[in-house]
Length: 182
Image (cartoon, rainbow, N blue to C red):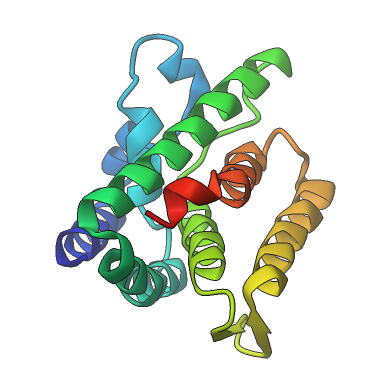
């Protein structure tokens, strides 16, 4: 967890101070992925684009990622998150290409926080969690709420633009239970 947090904080601060160079090289930009910059499929969630997203993402990595790493182990948690994030990025690139391009350009840990929330809810279905600072929810309620919030954003901003988060939610929610409980 410490390395994940340190990289997220360090890269985000660097991106805030360097005039946009780091963000431009790490963002999920499908047109650049199609031209061989495949590292973008992995790097886009590391850069938070403001102090509030950075604090929220780090808090959730610390709390939920910490709980999951105790249950699953660090390596399994990293593998799970990487699989979901890369799948979300690949599907987003394909959807962007099919929609004519220039709809998806993404930075930030929104997808990471969604993945951690859903995985945590599935792993600890009876534990309560305070979400969005006002709601106390458990298990399936968390999954439904996270998916509903992402669908609401997709209605307002477009499904293609929200594709990384939508796919991340779907992949985390549909991830085989047998692989989660090992």
